[in-house]
Image (cartoon, rainbow, N blue to C red; front, side, top):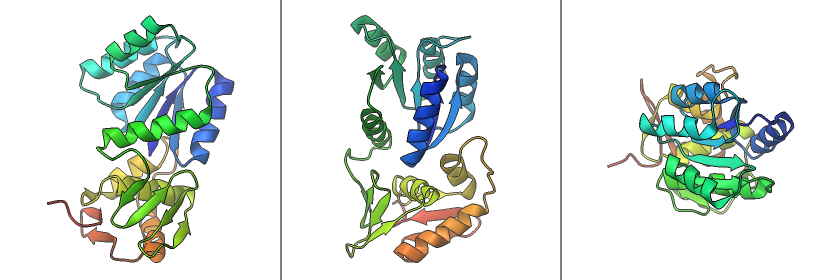
Length: 222
């Protein structure tokens, strides 16, 4: 899954990016409202962590512009402003969740996973699809035989995205957009390498190739 982190406190931003990447997210970072608004429109993020007190353009204004123009990306407001009326303003602007500073990273991770699941109509809890159970805390997957497989960071992000969209044809470019960060080397052919690795671990039948279109995880959608 790919996140946008909008935070102008550089020590906090750097620490959060490190922790989020360690938990299997691809993370793009910006420190001002203008760039955040542009990136939110241009890139297909799975969720946004948005500070309110931003330079150049306030976070609430950024969020309002996204919602007015139909951008429904899930947004967690992360801010030192914890007065109840400011929370109300955030939710009215279109926020999906609100976490006040200081906070525990573990809580942020749990809220992010729950928010992404809700946005993808998945049940909150463990991600289970096509006989697989994905353990997000340990970045492992258990197959239908009960065998647990360790995953690299890229394998984990790729499998999580595919398990969240079972039966859907996913092009290599779409997978690349959700697995890699903005400044990463986005050679879509590398996706083939990781698909092969997942097939070696989980079997060829779970990920099918639709020639000229992409890949399908699990049974095709009706």
